[in-house]
Image (cartoon, one colour):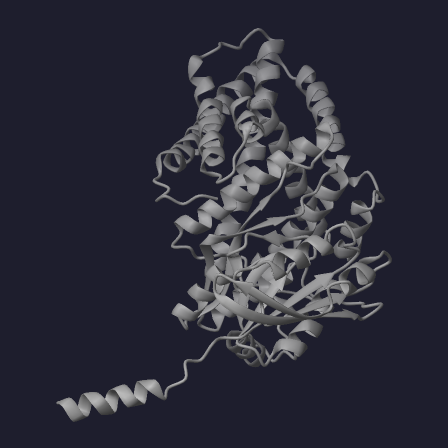
Length: 465
């Protein structure tokens, strides 16, 4: 046995351990305010990417100049030892494919690496984020991509509306991340904000879908589609319980509306059976179950709110309303659920807690999300061709129309029409409508409250978002 042991030891001594390689791609469009912080965040990582490519496209500001200050080789010493990386800045000029074109250009530069780290031009990460993502990816060859946990830093935010919108988006991110963590850490969307992809998985996706590049230009949600394709190719799409990143939030109603409508519209294209452009509808794909649930939930929220307000006003108009304390239970459960989500945030603050406890901000934010839901489905069903990327970019600059107010204007018009029709009805017809309407709303509200209660009392398994 001794000679055998010696031979085995000699083999180990002569074996070189493969160190995975990571190529980072940062697509950047008018990111002069954040690109410096993004690159500093990457260079400050405990596990620095082996190369960093900043791909600037369609920019009209100083993004190239600021990013170029970081270009060149960097020798860095961290807790993991001495590391080397090099930063390259590519200005590809006018790019009709926008972010997708920048990502595919970046992929062509790093396709020989083991992993592609995609980082948005406004996203900064905790120091160990890349280390955590790489460690988990290397530990399981079935993993095609892993996303970090996203949140928004609300400390530098100024203005009442901006603070309100950021508080709502922080809650929205937290709830989405928590859902994915509790679903076996299966991530429905490997967001471009800060995710790592196996280049082997990307090549398999390209082969299976007859694509020349991983990201396709005919989808409003290129990250969602790629996540579906990675899953369909037999790989896992995961969310890391440790890696964390802070993304840029929307601080105006126009900007937030344009972003959410683009995301929701693109998700509907993926969900819808059939074909839209060159994007195949995949209604029963496992990664879309959460999307279907979100859309059904928004439809239920719309119905309950509109029906309750309509029946309440109608009942008061004929002195037929009888208050019941049971009606207070659904909003209280919703408040407690929002509070639990806020408490699950790793860096929750008084603004997050207040957003949940005082209910009115959360309710206002829900109405805003309902308006996005209505605009997205209306735009999709109208089959009107719209460049949602361009509309979002325009809205972020302060341009665009008053489209984000259209659902509320239509709701007001419908309310006036319903009031006129109600007054034309006979007392018998009015009583019949109330007799049928209140039980229907009651049953739907009870079901909704029960589902919220399940979420409220579900164990979070120690996850922090």
